[in-house]
Length: 176
Image (cartoon, rainbow, N blue to C red; front, side, top):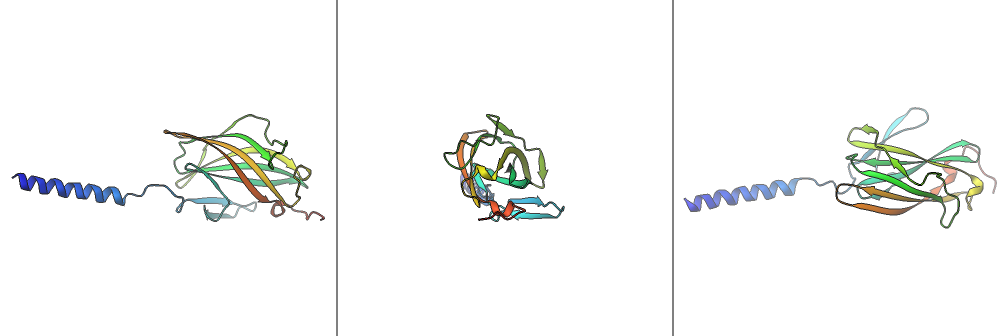
């Protein structure tokens, strides 16, 4: 009787170990697809590897730049999460390292994950505006973002440096 009970317990233990090892823990964003709609209403999906993202814990962040009028741009920060439960706070946003040009007037902005497409939550923050004279190199720029991500177990604060080719956002070619 003891031997049969021991064999049953061993089999149950092996089944539990097998079930736990086959569970997929979300540690990477291989299957993380982001919906994008361009100015003409064309919808497309991109994987996280195809776009320029920074990862803070389980949140992906990327800047989106829109030209308002010639040489004036608006920066949005878009955050993506698979759970939507993280609290994401944007603390400071600067143009270029050691720059005094701060894009935001507010000290902190909280990202609200208010849109869900399939299994991805999305939140957008208006990060501010800049003009071409604010950046030293007229073709590339850096946006320095201080992000704080808080989940159930930890708070992570990270400075992210996005290096952006600004020429792709211009409707007019700058003279060199």
